[in-house]
Image 1 (spheres, helix red, strand yellow):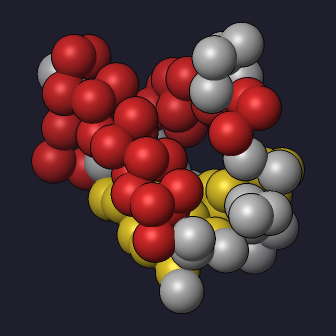
Image 2: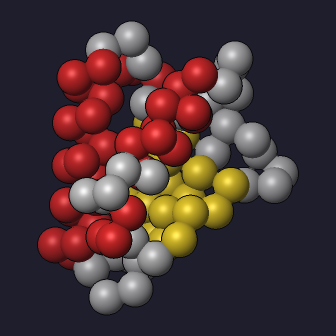
Length: 83
């Protein structure tokens, strides 16, 4: 199973952005998804940096296995899980 989160609609709402990222991680754990695709978009890169900072938090990092930055599309991240 693969989940997908598009951040384009909530790019300027910090609280909603954190909640959406937290919810998708929790959903991946609950459904035992192997991969979550996060789409911050290409733009200036600020939204991607924000998402990466969230994923690197000490309380979030132990919940997933690794992060993969898409080499063909720099506006996309993959978060891999080992359940």
